[in-house]
Image (cartoon, rainbow, N blue to C red):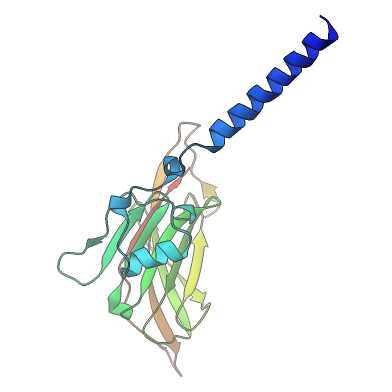
Length: 198
């Protein structure tokens, strides 16, 4: 092939590659945007927390349901691709509890409790089974966090033999103050949960 033909072929290849790169970068950003009809409105504690954590890029991912209220009690919840956020006003008007899946663990967080506490009790269970209670130090007097791999208990871990499976880890929290002879604890939060693959 003559030198000029090679040069033209190289130029055509470079132009084709550049055109492909431009076409890919011109794809609409909406290809990964959440369904706006599922996003909680501004002013919703659940929606505002989700947005302040990065929205669709947050640990929760996009919402998979609308925000729903609970029948017979105050509070609301919303399910997301990677977890759930719950407004639990029985612990204080701005209390939010949430669970999400990250790095192989179920992560449980809470914030906005109506008063300061010395420590927190967390109860968690797998697939509705027996609850385990742990004492957790506070991040602030009004917030805390706890994480666990719910697929492993007492040194034994579940396996799906490569077929994939899910466990549902559920969490509740209560704030406690140290007393002289015993602890004084508040009410338990509304339950929140997350599905964890194994």
